Length: 145
Image (cartoon, rainbow, N blue to C red; front, side, top):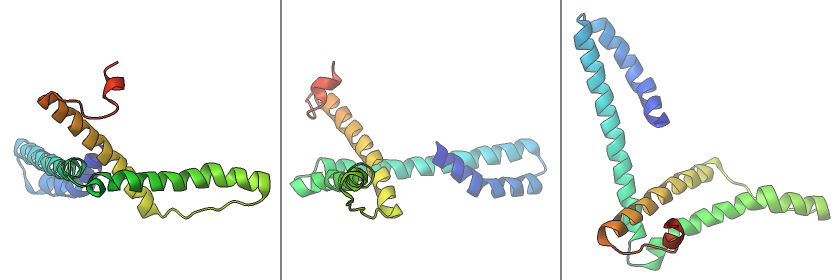
């Protein structure tokens, strides 16, 4: 919802001001603003659905690399974070050595996007499993408790 709020603030804000100045009928201006908000939200929703479909296609793909490249990438990034904030500081404190690995902002953003993709993909797997009546993964037993 925060992303939608940002879009409405940056894109729609100036347009709303123009509508207020250009349209004298306040009811018509309110209808125009509501329609603009609806279209922006619909556009955002379509983008999220398209991204979710990509993740679902990868998660249900035929080849092992296709299904697992995202988890491997996420685990690599988590290993870098664990090294930088857990392992390296303790090694530095105990032995005076510790390797700090660079984690560019783009990689951090990729991890946050990947976690969102995982959640959407896992939810899609659960929904598909429920619809087909089959179990979808190792967490299913724990999820049903």
